[in-house]
Image 1: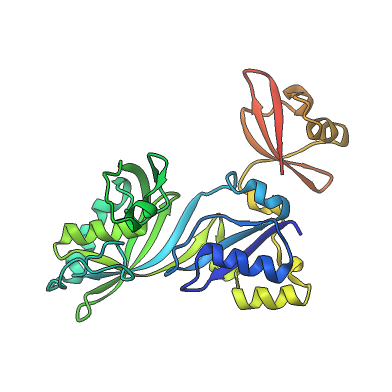
Image 2: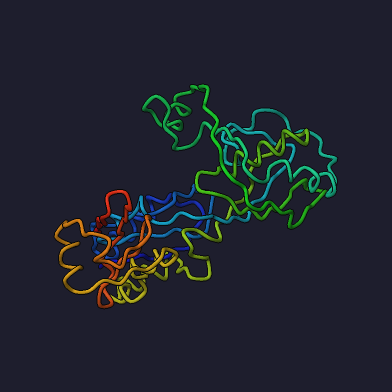
Length: 293
């Protein structure tokens, strides 16, 4: 089987747990995923089958969208409510207006420090491995982009706000919530997270894990796989003839005039209805190369 299966990841499961379950149910060894979700999070998890696993690092990441809940007055070591509370809960007297007024400062290109409990590598080691060993180290900040940060609702009695977050790849919503809580005073921890969009796919396109397992047992799962070419539909499509396709697939660098003189860039290359891979056109060298999956 080759293609992408869209799973609505259940709460309490790691992304690897989902892969292991599907690997056993479908009897497939080559399965991976794009875009890790924390165990507490739910939502869109693209699962890659067969040759699609080779495209894991090349899938257009684009923007990701989340529904996130911030519980004010709580500070934990992980940045979410599954972690160890670091101090007694602080009193919360925030208003909806105060929260809305703070959001613009966290919109646009911002600098963010990855949480200690994250998969980021520093000095060759995963931060979460260091955190589990009781170590906390200085983490370099990095630039991320928050395209939209909107308050959807606020419960003043509970001190919990629901946020709509549209952001770039690499944005940590936990860090965003922690920084927002610090800016407003009482601190905050992520109390719920649902990814509603990833890699151009939305939650409405997803199967539950139970549905996917049932289809696998009925040998009907392949029918629900998204063809790999559809994942690159945002790229400019370049259709080539049979001869050009054969040359490109054999690793030959084709001159751009033979391909219609495309501009420099990356293209989704097709031939006769078959997705061949990603073609990189370079006007300086005057040639195109193909990355196959």
